[in-house]
Length: 126
Length: 153
Image 1 (cartoon, rainbow over the protein chains, first blue to last red):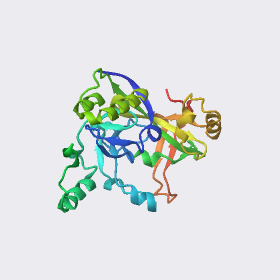
Image 2 (image 1 turned 180 degrees about the vertical axis):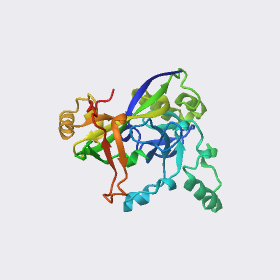
Image 3 (image 1 turned 135 degrees about the vertical axis):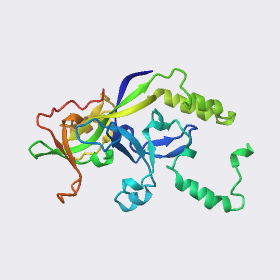
Image 4 (image 1 turned 120 degrees about the vertical axis):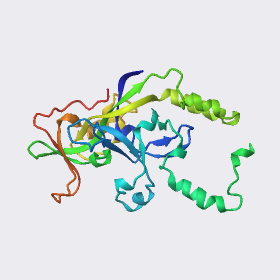
């Protein structure tokens, strides 16, 4: 069931907010929001538009040296995967199925796991 | 088009006169009833956490109860907040009725006086500036556009 809309401002309530997956694990932060038309076409001025995706990415390089990554190179999380909005953006899906933190997965699988003891789960000792 | 393209874009009137910059993009979020906090909600996650994490979870839940947290659906663009000068965000003081700590809201509202909301339907064109070589994005408003109060509903 749906009820009245909640009015938010993108910069104030969404950008730079932390994104958590369904288990509460941090995924990334909201770098930008992709706008689309009602049929998934390019958003046009003055015509109905909605948020189609959260754009995330390693922002450290552009934060240090300026500029911004091309939109096509930024991992995206479909807005349909957003479950709750509070002080953080909470997803309704697990981060394992997302491309958003592929850098972390790549480092874990290609580097950390090859270090002796790198496969040890410290939380499993509790 | 992304929200980041619109933020800080120059705003031009129907006749091309500079009016200011886009301060923010206003959205309407569809919200859903969720009496039991739903699957994947905070209570659901708490059930899966072990006892050592319980204190942290209760602390988080207490914080969350003070902050608004909604199950949301689609997000539709309502309009653009236009400010006469590039004065930053200042945590939304200029768009709420918060009055403390004095004198912060007074100073921020003075910096942001003249900010108004323009409906998305009143935006005639969004230009990335590449064709004209002007550099930077700009937004042109349609004739007869309305300047609405910027306060959040």
